[in-house]
Every structure is written in C-alpha cells, then in structure tokens.
Length: 104
Image 1: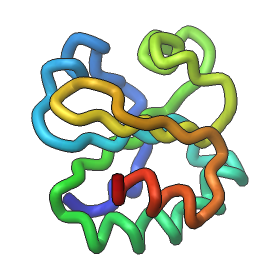
Image 2: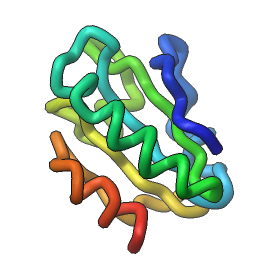
Image 3: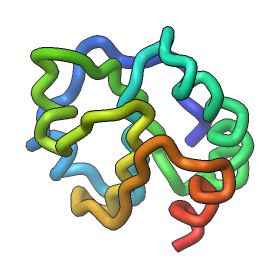
Image 4: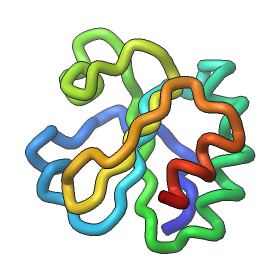
C-alpha cells in the first residue's frame, strides 16, 4: 500500500488495530510537527518498495486513546504490527532505522 499522506483525525480503536491482518505501520504524529515532516520523504521511499505494508497515519494528541495505548510520548512514533501484534517500534527514527524496521 502506498504512503498515507494525511493524518487521520478519527482514529481506529485498539481492538480494530489488533484485528488487522498482514503488516501495518502506524505512524503517530501531527501534520504541523517538524520531526514528522522530516521523515516524510524516507517513509514515501521505503513504502514505495514495500507494497505488502499498509501505512496509517494517526493524528495524535491529548485525549487520543490509541496513542496512549501504545505509550506514544514523542512524534513521530512508528509502530509496526503483523496480524495485530506489535513486532517493532521506533521513536523519532533516523532514516536508516525506518528501512531496518520494515526489513525485519
């Protein structure tokens, strides 16, 4: 699946995420976050090569339960799941760390 350019304001529930199948990359952040925008190019490039990975951007912030359920404190936080189970997580990753996460 292609890079998701927009952050979802309405987030799925944790239960919905845990019922997902295949590889799912959750990206927690905000469209105005400089750290998040700095990762856009590398995420686009990496995900272009990985059509087996679904990418979902979640607008995070106070009162957002999904981010809290994954203990998100800094943006961007990337959480990689396989069939609803967390298999990796990165907080403010360097460019090469993003590729390494998906190449596990």
